[in-house]
Image 1 (cartoon, helix red, strand yellow):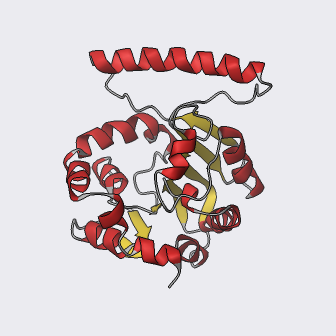
Image 2: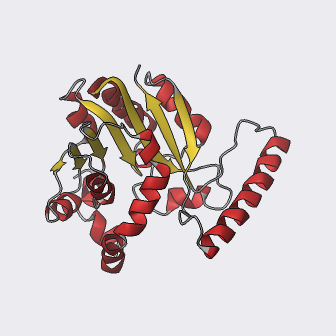
Length: 243
């Protein structure tokens, strides 16, 4: 048995304790604020758009899409546990390998979303997946890729070690490069904000502290000869278009 298959067969059970899974389901309102703040402006305005959530996990993003009125959204995951978890909540999720699913549906989707997926792949696998994604998108389609940020001085290295299935880390530069090699243009990379309550005192304080730290890190990276690195958020979100 492939080592990944062995891990993914029991991924939720071994990586997410029951309490964390229950919390993830209970905190859907928090996820909705998070996705609305970071993703909504990048998604198609047409609520009939076909959207595929690749590596959909426990389905939080699919639930967000449903609440936002996207009625042609579906998910795919290679984990039986994840697929069964989502189907028990009446979410349209199929089991499969992301690249294989995309390859079977040329110019079918208006948007592809990869949340916390790309870091689980080797570089050749990631490029093959994005090649399949480019072919599966319709003209003017969009791909959104959220991943951990290797440039974050606090959590960058830890992000590789926190999950047994993590293979590759990206900074804003290498993530944009990956999308461009696969044919996407234009490509933009954004910080992912985790403090999404506009007037909550703790969120206001956290955003102010994070902004100060980001400014300091940007100066330090510039002094060390890395002026192109500007994003130091825990996660980054790349948005690429198929023109």
